[in-house]
Image (cartoon, rainbow, N blue to C red):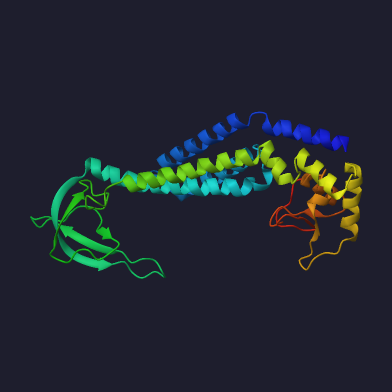
Length: 302
């Protein structure tokens, strides 16, 4: 038990020594990765970008694990990668709009032809418009697109055209990048928020809450009301006996109530269960401690 306490103290020191600088460093890395991948997205294809995103995800898993909440690090890293990917994707859309605004030219064009995208499952079928200038020349670039049927053949429309013909012509309203900029920023903020959340999850306060160990005052009150004055060593033996003798429920879990072991943490209980060949379940306990040979998410033990 003494060795267990020493191990917990050492783990706590390693976990909380520099949590804020580490979180700030991870946040800066996330922003740098978003910026770098955004710059690369315009010049390189999936052959390079996909491996880079995979490396980005692996690095995030390793970094987030250092914040302390190891059992949730993979999910958090995947969320950060997904949010970063969406931030880059939306930012790329905003870049096209900003580029069109900067080098584009506003003209009045006439709708020469109209057609819809071919049907592809449940994908929305956009409307396409071939445009021509008043002098009969074609508006450069791909066809203009809209989600709804807004223009008819022969109708005049004011658009911003790309003289280089690389970008689609768009109406001034379509070329407004404010929405995309806000969306990209929101996804980046979500990624940073996940870093902050994992920092909190790895803190001692959150660890004590997740361990299920009540405060000293609550433990003292519980012992006074119930008359339970057993020592931690006795509670460990009681838990071992319960794991050996309690019947499993219909899902195969052995369930105990943590208030019956007021001096034990869930991590310590997980260690005791591990010694008997069981694992402690971290998900969906609803106030109980549950043990089984194979679990969905394992509680880390000493």
